[in-house]
Image (spheres, rainbow, N blue to C red):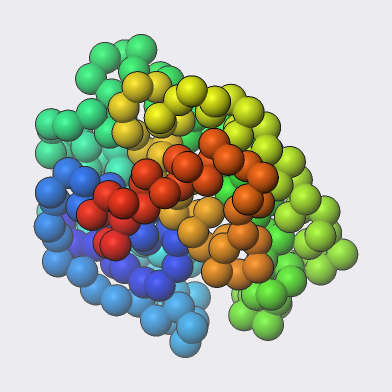
Length: 203
């Protein structure tokens, strides 16, 4: 297998997941700033033009970060990042979905339509008039999650999972592009520091 890697939060989710599981794969760096991901050779591997992509041993490709992580989890069993029972896996996937739709999507779109607009305006439809509202939606949902995190160590249950990796990487990214964690969100701030202290956070 081979991982097509790049800058940005999406590939970091996969790298952090791999680091937690002790998986080491060859990597090919894709030049996002040079729009290599939007050109013919890479589009032949991943027609969505996004990174990362995982080249499988049979020459086919997988994309979408949660799909790649789940595939790697099945190919390299061990650990408990997604779950060891049907119930644990369902809870992890439920929280990954909630985090993705409620926080990550508005956070990243808010960036693309504002601070990142010069990068994305020729690559996709951008809606600058929606940026402030989307950022506010993300903050509203972080506040909601902060309330639910009272007395909890991790998002999806009593152990560290893909849901924690997913949210951590994007909140870290948000802080770097003008969407920091509100210090009033004490539970999320404490959770973030717990994740940041893990060696995999440097992946």
